[in-house]
Length: 358
Image (tube, rainbow, N blue to C red):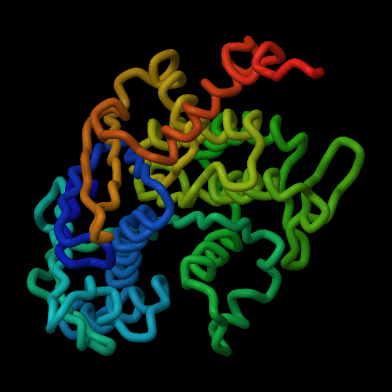
C-alpha cells in the first residue's frame, strides 16, 4: 500500500505531502489544480515498479532510465525538466514514495535542465508484482483494435496510460476460485449496461438480450462502464493492486454515476487501493452517502487542491470533504442549486420583481 507521496517543485506544486488512505483517496480541485498530475506521478512509479519485478536487472541506472521514460510518455512534456516547477534559475524536483513496507520505498529527483533521466536517491529493495490500472477520462474500447501494436511501432501523440490500459483490456478472462468474486463485482455493472462485454477478433461488443452491438454504437457512458467491467473480468481490478481513475464522472449521467460510485467502493473494499480525481459534486455526495449506508469502515482520505494567486497549488487533506477547504468548482454547483430554488420559489427574479407595464 502506498502510504505517502512527498513532492517538491513538481509542475504546479511548490511543496506538498499526501498521506494516503488504505482504501480510497479522492483528489478534488478546479481545472488546472494538478489533480491528474498526482495520479500520474504515483502511477508512473507503480508501473515501472511492476515492470522491474518481471525483469532481471534492477540497478539504479536501469530504474532511473525506465522511470524517466515513463514520466515522459505519460505526462508528454517536450523534456523531463519541463515537469519541474518553473521559476527563475535552476530548480530541482523531488518525488518520494512511501509504503506500508519500507522495503518498497522510493525517492527520485531531476531538475529543470534534465532531458531523459532521473536521479534515484533511494531504490526499492522489493518490487510490486501487480501492474497498476489507470483509467483515463476517455473510454478506450473503441480504439482498442490494433492500438497497442500501432503505438509501439510508430509515434502517437497519446499518453502511455492509454496503451497500458489497452494491454490490460486484452488480457484473458480470469478463471478459477476468483470467478465468484468477479461475478459479484460485475453484476451491478452488467445490470446498468443491460448486457455483458465480449471480445471477438480483437473487437469489443456489448451482448444484449436482443442481440450483439458493436461497441462503437454503444453510448460513451456505457462504454466506460464496459471498460471497467472488462478490467474486473480479467482480474486486473481484483484483490491487491492500485487503481487510478481520472474523472470517473466524465460523460456520465447521474444514474450511471451512482453505479460508478458503488463500483469504486466495491473495488476499494476488495483490497485495491483506489485513487480518483474529480470535481463532481454529485459523485462526491454519492460516495459519502454510500459510505454512510453500506461501506462504513473504509479508510478514506480526501485532498483539496487550492490554486494560489501566483498559480502555486497547496493541499488540504482529511478524512472527509469537510476538512479540505472550500473548492470553487463545488461551490459553484451549490450556489447554482440555491439560485434555482430561489427562482422557483419566487425569492428572487419571480414575476413580482418584473416592472409593471404601462
